[in-house]
Each structure stands twice: as structure tokens, then as C-alpha cells.
Amino acid sequence: MRILLTGGAGFIGSYLSESLLNDGHIVTVIDNLSTGSRDNIAQLENNERFKFVEGDILDRELMLKFVRECDCIYHLAAAVGVKYVLDNQLGSLITNVRGTEIVLDLAHVFKKKVFFASSSEVYGKNGGLKSFKETDDRILGAVNISRWGYAFSKGFDEFLAVAYHRSRGLPVVVGRLFNICGPKQSASYGMVIPRFIQQALKNEPITVYGDGKQVRSFMYISDAVVAIKAIMDKKEAQGEVFNIGSCQSISIADLALNIKTLSNSSSQICFVPYAEAYDNNFEDMFYRVPDISKIENIIGQFSKLKLDEMIKEIINHYRGN
Ligand code: UDP
Image 1: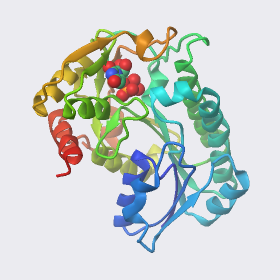
Image 2 (image 1 turned 90 degrees about the vertical axis):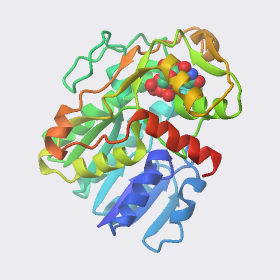
Image 3 (image 1 turned 45 degrees about the vertical axis):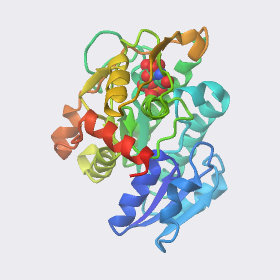
Image 4 (image 1 turned 180 degrees about the horizontal axis):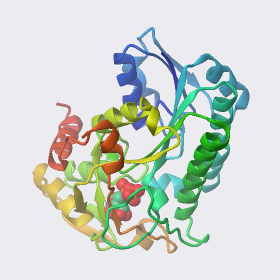
């Protein structure tokens, strides 16, 4: 198949591209290199079935050309990372809303199947200590708290995707990704695991934001790629929204401790107020863990790697092993 991958030079997109090439497909990546990088796809560029196009999903003419030529689309292009999104608010919202609208509209015009990469951010600050199901309410904060704009825009994209399916028959699958991690993930946009590991390896303070009691679950990139490809192939998944993540949860303070231990680091673990890390108007989500029964009922078990194994793999990567 000829596959178009938006955002394919990003962390997740580059692994997905590699895997699709290994499956024998022809892969075209469109990426504006805002957070992705040529380094991420360097080893793919010699493959004659791979093509990289530096361009923006907001460029409708460019997108039209490549959507028309492909058989299906993985739409991953979006701003990534809490820090990056806060530093680039308007651009992030426009990319998410206008860019996704362009992708979905062209997919509809040319009758192409789409996977849309949404985010667990859409659940917002829905409190409690309960794993999120796809049908749960989403509670998003006030407009003056910039973080929620991203969640709104991704939520809007989901509504748009589902409406294109219901009103126009577009074959589209929505995946809500929960904290994917792995080698090549940049620490520059705020993501916690690469940040903590780099701090630990340099024996610098490991910076836990807030009181560290906030809980996340992390999924390894190779498991995420398996899930994304598998759910895209299922007819019964079309028009549906799926959590994609791991159920193994951990507090951020414990994560810091695990990383310190597994890397034999002498780093101090220090607690940084949110106001210092982001700004005065920052709100975090305190418990974000997925219920993955919906996707597992269709594709089976996919979340294989345990957190300590992921951390060891990423430490090895940074150490150059
Ligand atoms: N975090 C932290 N120290 C850092 C970076 C992040 O304590 O250096 C926290 C962050 O406040 C959040 C969690 O780690 O509670 C996960 O952050 P990340 O940005 O990786 O993803 P999020 O789940 O917030 O989208």
C-alpha cells in the first residue's frame, strides 16, 4: 500500500514509518520539522520506498497532491509536549484544528482511510482514581488556563473525525495516545521520561513538578506502533475512538526514584512548583491511566513492555549501547 504519514519525522511517526516500511509498504512522510527532525528518519531515507516531503498540513494544495496519490493516511502531525504547546499556543491550535480539517476533508474527497492520533489530554482533569474509558466525561478547565486549549482542539478533531464518518462515511479510526515513550523522544518539549533520564545520567537534580503524586502510565513506542497499525486494519474500528496506552501506573515521584535507581545516579530528586516549571496559570491532571479493554477486545493484548524494562531500554539508548 502507499501510505501517507503526516508528522512522520516526529518521535512516534518515525517509528511508525519504519515499521510500515518493514511491512513492505511505500511510505510518504509530510512534516514541517517543527518538533520532528530529519535525524529521526535518517536511516529511512536510503529506502527507495520512503519519501520525505518537508511541508505543512496547512498547505491544502500540497496535501491534496499527496492524499490523492496514497491509499491510506496516518495523521499524526500536531504540536507535541506540554511545554511546547504552552510556548506555541496559537500555532498549536491552528495546526490541530485547521490542519486536521484539511486532512479529513481531503481524505473524504479522495475516499482514503485515516488513522487520527488524538491524545489522552482530551480527558482533561476528570478527577478521581479511575482509569479512563472512552465514554467517560471530559472535564476541561477555563480558557485562561492555556493547557486546556490543546485538549479542546484535539477533542474538536475527534468530533470532526466521528462526524465525517457518520455523515459522510469516511473510514476513520481515532486513537487516544497515553504517554508514549522510547529512544529518540526529545526532552526539549517537556516530556518527563527523557527529561528524568537525561538528568539522572548527568547526575543533575531530577525535577519533579508539583508534589509528584500525580499519576501517569507509560507505553513503549514499539507496543504503540503495533496497536496503531492493528486497529487501523480493523473494519469494526471505523468511526470509533480507542484508548492506546498501558494500564501500569506510577506516580511521578516514584518514576523519578525508579529512574535514579535504574541508572545508578547520584542525582537529588527535587520538587519544583508548577508555577516555576510552567506558569502561574498551570493545571496538571492528577490521574491519567487508560482502560484499554475496548481496543483489546478487537486487537488482543498489545501492551507488553513493563515500565522498568522501558526505562532500561531508554537508558541504554542514551548510553549509546
Ligand atoms: N513532569 C515533571 N518533571 C519534568 C517534566 C514533567 O515532574 O521535568 C511531570 C508533569 O508535570 C506531569 C508528568 O510529569 O505531571 C508527565 O508530564 P509529560 O509532560 O511527560 O506528559 P503529560 O502527561 O503531562 O502530558
